[in-house]
Image (tube, rainbow, N blue to C red; front, side, top):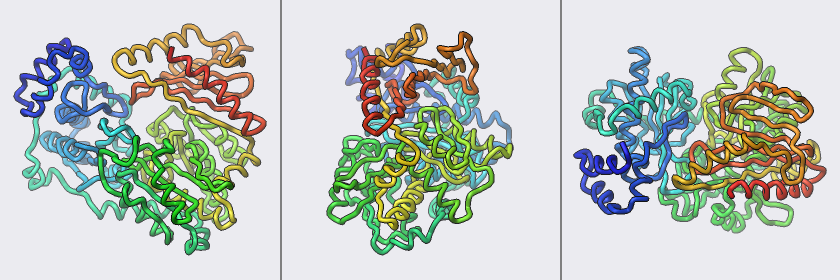
Length: 574
């Protein structure tokens, strides 16, 4: 069906209410807008769905939610009656329409005879992963668009291990969606489904079970207790789901001075105090910095709207606050956990660290200097979760930490996704430990560079919006494969790695080598000066991501390399 026919079908469908029909009627004659809403379905992948909210096939709305859930229900039903009995857990964040979308998903599952455990109100993403594992569910759904702007919403899907959906199941859902009418769905009455026991509401009892696991991750309580009377920190949830459990977890840790940004403790899917609710963006911390200066705090912690990612700001020697990157935070935390577990006798046998291929190589250096193996996976916590399960099931290693550069950290064995709640506790413990030594986390970072060497990183987002953008993204990757660069920023490329087919070409060796990892649309270039440059299209947003991972004689040297190779990356948009 072409986009014009799809538009007419939606405009005339009895499934739409008057407000939805009015929204579509208002774009009549705007060919570009009609095409953008109806040229295709939102693509369902292992991360589920994500898009801007609005009426249309290529938008997030209750019809698309119902359609995806109906398809997901069929996949679960195909697993057999024992799998169906296990039921599904459903969670949602603070975004506009998230609660409505979650209830609609619950009603579709209930209509299919699949029992639902629905959270009573918004909860952090990691608590959903925990609930799936804790209650033995076959699957999970989370309505969230993570750190995306307010116009977005998303539909994340999980399997019984608590990690995001495996590719084979995601492919089945996508196939069913392609082959079925978006309006051909069966929706249960919510009140009746609750009364019949098909929908069970989860609340504080699940919070308590989750928090008990979080607090069990504390390594060095004495380090916290030593400074609890004087150590001050500022916390912001950026209007999101961390507002309740993170302050509570920090209180249980023994922190006596957790100062929350009052304006951002207000739940609001419009995120009125920030341009973007993303802890990667320093400008989002403006209110937190103002409060920290007023209260005399040296440590600021912020979680994104669904509380799966966490960002830090720390005071430097000149009194100013500096954002720590996800790479830097991860290296600090890995080094700290190794030391804390060794001090307290909590280090497991065969300890290992996990990171993604786009995460700093400094993490590998920290792990290996301290006698740990470090393994790479593709970007995404479903891959980190799979590697953790594989290593621990085989007895090859016990994972003490998994992380990626985009502010995601996974600790413990009770979740299989990014977890800002547990990370907030671990990072606060770490900050308290260094405070007891008279150091801020920035001081600690400089000390790590002295110990392990100098590294510098940058993640660039080459935004390519609209239909033309999707084509440009695909053309760029084809062009880079067809004509791989011999030099980047004047530096020779010595290795070309293509993770789509798993091939490695070395300038010194004529034959291709097969790598361990394959099946992802990622290109990596190793330069003669030790820099790695990685290019991949985002799976959730209209942009190509370029990662620059540099090593150098000093931090200034690393910064110079990052700047030089950034100029090359900027040119990829042309």
